[in-house]
Amino acid sequence: MHMVRLWAQYLPQMLKGVGITLELTGASLGVAIIFGFILAIARLSKIRLMEIIARWYIEIVRAIPVLVILFIAYYSLGQIGIKLSGMTAAIVSLGAFYATQFGEIFRGAILGVDRGQKEAAAALGMPGGLMMRKVILPQAFFSILPPATNQLSNLIKDTSLVFTIGVADLMFQAYAAASTTFLPLDMLTLAGIIYFVFYIIISKFLARWELNVQQRRS
Amino acid sequence: MSNNVVVRAENLSKRFGDQIVFEHVSLEVHKSEVVAIIGPSGAGKSTLIRCINVLHPFNEGTLQLLGHTLTGGSALPPKPVLNDIRTRVGMVFQTFNLFPHLTVLNNIILAPMEVKKISRKEAVERALKLLDMVGLGHKADMFPKRLSGGEQQRVAICRALAMEPEIMLFDEPTSMLDPELVGEVLAAIQRLAREGMTMILVTHEMMFAKEVADTVVIMADHTIVEKGSAQKVLETPQTERSRVFLRRVLNPGTTALDFEPMVGQGGDH
Image (cartoon, rainbow over all chains, first blue to last red; front, side, top):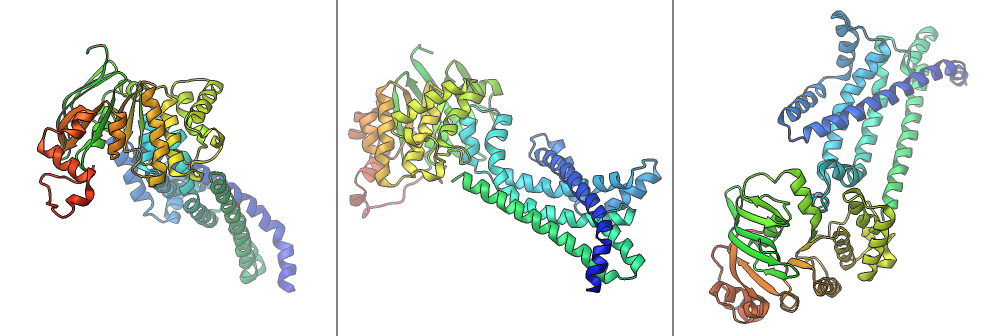
């Protein structure tokens, strides 16, 4: 009972953090998807230089822990005169890292579309861009959803790293509440529960979407 | 090019790396002519018609079609030429290759609307007429997955025809079908032939080739070994290589015992 009363007392503060976490997740997801798509197209490009740049970007950035990227964006760039706010540094870092993940998912999905589909579109005289938009991507989308759901749940969890640079997200609020109450078990358990609820909502929603897409095509 | 020759291939050769797919292939196709290409697997038949639709470049020779002259090289011709040829040459594939995310109707109207910029209304009208022609008007709103192989292939034929092509290419259109579904697809092709469509057809259906084709071409060992009127080629073949091939396909049972491996047969292309 004691824990539940305490949770009720700190919930409003936690929910403030939830807002920041959601905002952060949405913005970094947007950056990761757009930038990831550009990386995928670059890696599939016939222009060799673009392919090389994209490949090396992916190889390097995905090998670095998100926390290191976050500290580079917030502290190291500041040292050379590029001062980013905590929120901006967080969105840039998460976006830059998850773009490598989404980029590879998109590339795999595009390559996974049956070669006959490309041939059929080409045989109808469709130029490359049209073929991509109307034939390849709608089919690739099918195989993007499951791995993308996976990466999205990783992204939500990784947003908790931003409390280390002082962004007042859910983890930050939980940590602050733990410090003032000297009850880290209670407060961090509550944060864990909230992250879990997020995950459940999002994964159920995406699973239903996936099912809808599948049913519509049969 | 004389005014009724629509395709003229001269000395075409095609290699994938060091592997020869076909070489020294020369072929003329006249307007409204139906040419059937037959021959063992790996002879280069499918690749040849893919080169005619410029899905693949060829290495040597010249190919004149629809007012364009293409010469051999490692690259495809410039995009405007490529797309002009592809919009005017229809292609039907062995594996149908319908777009699984689109309904039958949307499969057919996509290219006319997006490539030829025809209005939706007109494209739909034409698509429904084509579907009726092959007896599938009632399946317009279904997704390809719900259709049998024979139905999918008939839709694929409609999709190609919706672009109002001047030449139709068929790449083994019935070889993926259950035997009982072959007839409905062949009937659609035969109907096109009667309407005067110029066609090049790679097929394993000998009887059909004999009935529908004006000209039969036998490809074996990476080149054309015989070509002439359907009756002449199939009944009185002039080369030993053609005779061996025809004996095997026309009487598969009787040749099984004296089977000898043949020289020069490559892999499947």
